[in-house]
Image 1: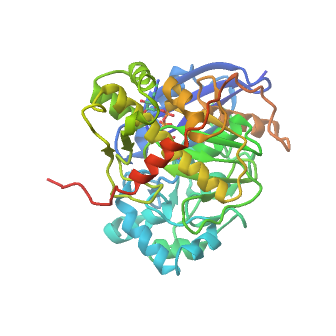
Image 2: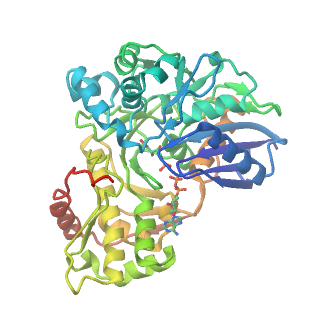
Length: 470
Ligand SMILES: Nc1ncnc2c1ncn2[C@@H]1O[C@H](COP(=O)(O)OP(=O)(O)O)[C@@H](O)[C@H]1O
Ligand SMILES: O=C(CO)[C@@H](O)[C@H](O)COP(=O)(O)O
């Protein structure tokens, strides 16, 4: 009965699960926090990973492991493998202008959608490369290789320290803007365009269950993948399943045989971890919007949820547009959040709590509509991530999303997907091992289109004006 480990190195924390490779049963787990901010020294991830591994009882008895991690972050390495500058994360919006320039230089959004299924936004790795090339040419000149957070962690866990040992998978590579999930090849021309004619080494793109290294303790290392592809693997998401994750990011995605080609740039044509596609919509603001309102109201998450459920649907016209950290969907990197409809009657904690949950869910419902417009079938939503722990989110979700919502028991689904990939790598079979699915709770409710209509009317009042700087 071999054991396998799965890692989720996400924006806010690192989680490790250790499961039985055959049955999938959870044996032990651990976690550690990441530093705040939108640029992070990758060494901090490795420290947190070490802490999470220790908290999970170590890897001595583990036969295989894989890493899932936040997508898109740019890690620049010099020729000796040292990190050139702190990694720029997916939620760092300083590359917004670089993204706009890249879109224009290739001939517009359609050209990018046709080339790689992804239109550069601030989040996409290619935009960060351009930002480094222009703002920090000395760092760009020192950069011999670029990789993603999961690639870097996987490489550091292995025994081979050479740049040639860097590996990624198509799930994470598809979020760079210089890899096509249709041809499964890097687009060197787009890499050069982004990095102003520099051609850094890239990780080789491994197959879905290929061994890419060995841990010093002897465990086989699987290719790993981006966090959203890992979650889809854990949930065994199929046709008609839309996975919504409410973590730091809000993600709406679906496993599909068809690649997305959305010239609006809203639906990204990413790949999954099994050889298929993962059309995906991502918002910059999700669980932290709930966190912000707990701070505003001076309550904890349980109280916020109770307050939200105590206010009427639509919160008597109070609407929160949750663009607290700028926004990616819609693409408004410089937007800020807004509350509309304040009256004496709506100036209550319950109304604000309800407007927060509804605003968050309305943004995600917009994402579901964009997936539908790309031909994705939506039979039901599977809701995961820290925000799914909120009872109010779970109960209001079916009314706002208009479909039944399944909530698996609270767990670490990204780390679980990585663990399932590790078991697959160990087995070396064509299909991943069949693991039983977590118990789920089903939520249904009458649709409340009026809530979305009011949100839509207010959403477009928000602008891209940057807040004053000191
Ligand atoms: N009961 C809860 N209700 C609402 N939000 C919660 C709850 N518990 C945790 N969270 C929030 O969920 C987020 C963490 O979720 P997670 O999916 O782990 O995020 P990430 O993968 O981006 O690190 C945090 O912002 C946390 O405050
Ligand atoms: O940018 C995306 C997807 O395109 C995000 O989903 C990141 O992958 C970070 O995820 P979390 O920190 O929310 O887990």
